[in-house]
Image (cartoon, rainbow over all chains, first blue to last red; front, side, top):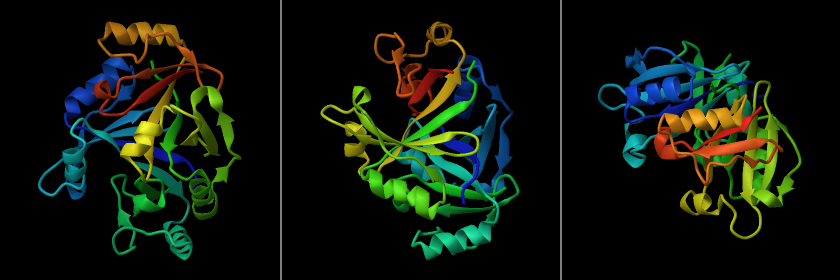
Length: 134
Length: 134
């Protein structure tokens, strides 16, 4: 079912410092910050030859990553995102297997403008998994 | 400097359960466990179209992931691995930029039989970064 690893998302306490570290120290291709007010984050995309890294920083009140950064003040990997062909078929298959989909199970439009779902970390090795319809 | 994302490594408390979850629930291509006694882990490789996931479980005494699992009993993402062309040149560039290389700075032969280094998580957004000479 799952296809490509779409991205690894890293929550960071200082977006400018993290972007500089990836650009200047690791020599990666780092884009300008993009505010995603609907998702409560500012994102810096980093292009690797085969996938992307996304640096996430809270934006506005009630950001979904504020709690994570409170627990992990130096930052850390927040989630990984796998691509699926059909998000509804993927959800039905996961639920049939007993996996827990976060929220009400309805795909939302994610930061890339495509339908996404999040799966419960306890069902996937302590890892928050995002599925994105490719 | 960094190239492809070689793999995402996830430490898991129950290797068989995690492998089954990726194979049966997520429908991924999951390989048989491989013992890596020199690295203190048993590894399950999962092939995605563009990269790999590696499930890690402690093997023997003093496994390098035992402490991580003690702190994260459900498991979690342990490190991410970026490819570099020349591990010694990468190390020298990183040290010149003030990044900390773990250990004595000498590349070791990693689980894929290639030279690797690990970078200090505090310098990279709370994320343990492995560099592997591709």
